[in-house]
Length: 578
Image 1 (tube, rainbow, N blue to C red):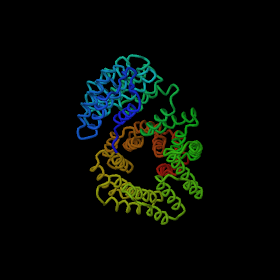
Image 2 (image 1 turned 60 degrees about the horizontal axis):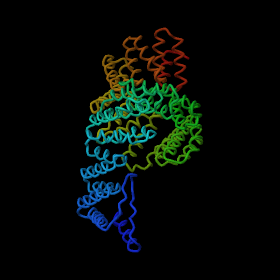
Image 3 (image 1 turned 180 degrees about the horizontal axis):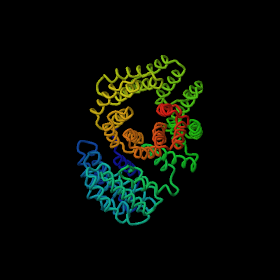
């Protein structure tokens, strides 16, 4: 059913006029300065005809009639209606004409000015948007100005010329960039536009200038967090400076997540410890900390953190984020119980998972529990019975079964399973890489190298393949110059990966460069305390005669993971009992 709001209002006025002496018709006004205009018969007919045309085959005629009525009556509501009709007809130029007429009639109308600004941006008339943008900020109450500044980058997000947008906005914000009260938000807006224009270095400079105006401002720090990259160390410096004060826990959590993404686990752990100390009722920090502790085999600490998260999360309102977080916590708690061989408790934790999206992970854990009890056939049957409604679900089922077989050292069965899957087109680099790693476990080194070189040929930036092949050669004291070249290639793609640094140190050690190996391993272990790295660092120290420190490092490694194969093999080969 078609709606004619203005025409219906006019008909109501006529009906009332027939039942009572003529009175000036009430006029709805959106601006205080709007004039009061009686709705006479001529105006009524013009509005009615305009609405009929607007909803019929000639919207342009309807637009012209309504805009003419707006000019005659100086009615803001009619100007807005003309803009709406132009929008409905997808006529941007007409919408801009009506909005400008509205703005001209009501110079102090923020609503009219906002329409002009938005239409100019939508039409990609970026250069013409500077004055309306200035007017928007001038018409905004001071208490709301930071919010308007923060919204500017989103407003320009769809323009085609991002560099021009950044330049125009920066010029329009000149006064606000210079005022201490608005400089942080203004520079943050400029920085985001520079980033959108593909100039992250200039974006960092904008964030720095915003922070210089107010070190406690959140906007520049959030921008710095978004810009964090090894190639832009100044961005992290902005974040760290903000954290020296009393930061939002959400921002410190964001920094911790960025550190985790960069595999800087020790630093991320320190940030999480600060959050849990300063704001002990912040659930997410406990969840991330517990997950990280479990990854590092700190089971008791992980259990305490996860239980604290569950306690806090259960007090929250229901929602998708809470449901997924609890599911992750229950999975981790099940894993801890499983490692302790408390299989009934492990299953009980899994029974608490309600989120459908996490049921596959829950079944995966149930399969692991069965396998640990010697029921591998049942475990594999459980995984194979899971639905695979999408290719992604089929892939997850395969990965879960391969991982289960790998954990229980059934390498040949896992290899055969992957071989069947990898043989199907298209080429899947991840599957072939996993197949190569299983070939290495089986001692089939020629097959491992053949598969890794297939991955490198198909995906030249697959850094794990370079690292795996280089490390395998170094471990066996084979083709050491080639091994070093492969590992350095891997580092060029992932310069902050401590495990690739560990591989480089190991090939340096094999080549007799013990001092360089020690330097690299010290840095890698500081970044990522890990049993594998501890094994290599201890052996280099042992070979240099620093046996007390070597034994201390090995003890730390055993605390991190007492079952680590590399560490156990090292201690056995060197006849060491730390």
